[in-house]
Image (tube, rainbow, N blue to C red; front, side):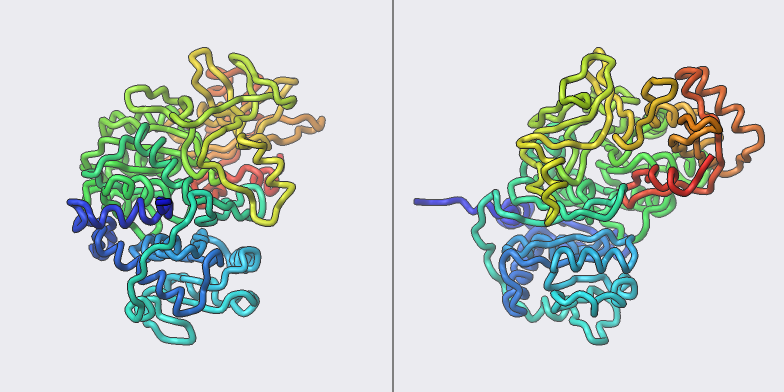
Length: 516
């Protein structure tokens, strides 16, 4: 009986090595201009499989990846899948203690680390008994660790192993917006499912696209944007290993002229402020822009369309579902909403008793689709409360509109009642950022002198603005736009807001660290 190898690396990498554009660039490093073709990527990933064999790292064992966005990332990731070894990409912005927790939790036998990040993680390596090999990418290639470049050069090419689409392919640790990161396990088939649904039917990715994703490769949104979707059609991705600032992003857009740009609301707002102040411009021939991580304010989407002529397709995804499952679509964009279900996914909005809420109701969003994670590693209770059969609880609160579109209201833990009525922080935040002085805003519940919960706002101002008389102006804007009982009783101007690496505002830190 003939069987088909369902190894995701065969579909995303090797398939293109035999096609007409095998010599086409799969990835370009924006800082160095270094490229790798699909044919060379196929060869290099085959050598990674041999590297594992040489070092005794076996199928189903984990390897951690603390790797910046560079060509080494896809080489290691897809090479691991070819060998049946499970790569675990790590957030490159964490502290040493969190890395130690993750390395111990995953029991990774090897670590691939960019030389720039080695000083952060090196102090805790001795505390991780399962870790046996450290491969350093770039740098002087000196010291006690192995050089990834030299080890790869000493390796031979190996064919990918046969796997089932249901075999564990990789782990992603959740962003930890409400606590310690959790190991989210995904199978080979999940990658192609997201490409066949969102990538093909919403994003409309094409082989002649050039893609640039502000979101980094180490988390689910960036992994789909910069690897899965472009590689599904043989497109080209531009990688930036540095922190995305308005200056660095504008430079990539103007130098490499991407047609697809993947951002987050915080970055879109910062880019607009940067450009509107005369500090930059965008000349890239953008045909598709997308956003996720946090709900996109209507003002930001409308201004971006005015500036570039391209709408932003705001959507919702999660590490647990691997990518976006609810989204606006080309030609069907309503700013201020998260759109409708991506083809291939089913959604429900339910109350605390599990019953579907009607039009105008607010409830928790549940999603069903074949990209759902298997579970959380070694967290059975949390797995059972999140993955309920075919359905996954997102922890997000949504309102159902008459048109069937969904409006984001906030995380389940962020919602609170004022005068017995549910208040959605995002609704107040949208009103606050409509003020010309406000760049970003976050709203949390705080208790007044009588012990009752009321909204409290934290705002970040645009350059050149001061907070004089601003609190009262912002209170009046909220009263006028969305309701008198929803206005923030306190408004505090802050230099920045606490966020995860994905751009999500960590409101729990505002609740914990600030008090009315």
